[in-house]
Amino acid sequence: MISKSLFALFGAAVVTLATPQAVAQSGSNGWEFAIAPYLVAAGMDGSLTVKGIEADVDVPFSDIIDNLDFAAMAHFDMRNERWVVTSDLFYVDLEGSNDVALGTATVAVQQTLFEVAGGYRVSPIVALLAGARWVDLENQIRYTGQILDEEVSAGKSWIDPFVGVHLMKPLSERWWFGARGDIGGFGVGSDLAWQAYADIGFRASKVVSIILGYRAIDMDYEDGSGRDLFRYDMLIAGPQIAVAFSF
Image (cartoon, rainbow, N blue to C red; front, side, top):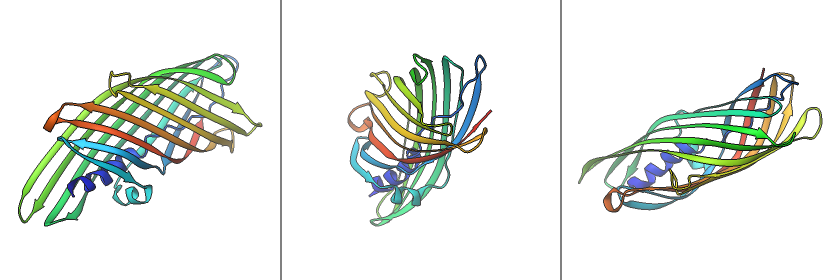
């Protein structure tokens, strides 16, 4: 029962992993910049193991949003005709309680994800990417019941290097299509981590653009064994929306 409370809150912490592609288009020799706050309505499918206790997770977005107290997401990039540099910072701090058999389970979650990547355009529409994603999780579970009072905490941090390809194809002066795929982990952090997305962008003005898309990200991370085993094997996928400001 404690695990179900953890999954709902933990899910709320990670559903917003998506990083919208900023939309700055570089001039002849100069750099252009873009910043994009974003939201993603994703669900979770996978498994989570904490202190050797494993349970399956199949949580739709409608259940996750009920447990989300606070989330903040922003993406930044800079680019010119050949080079692209991007970064993404995501932070969430939340706490919630669920009634369980003979007691109450309270779960607190803090999560930070920070991604940095560099890219080189091999053509006007295709860029090769390489970077790293830092993941930091802090979880605390407090159970107060008629039979048992218990508190369990688990915190993990790791870095996933990755390589990928990004495509951005103009459809008209105001519309474009974008897609990205990357793969990483390689046993350095996660055993395997990958993400893929596709989006459609509309340039409403020289400064503001609207981006709609769909993203999937999967991480398989494992550390420890027995009662100390921590494993996060999760697919997070769903539609997203971003508002990008270029300058």
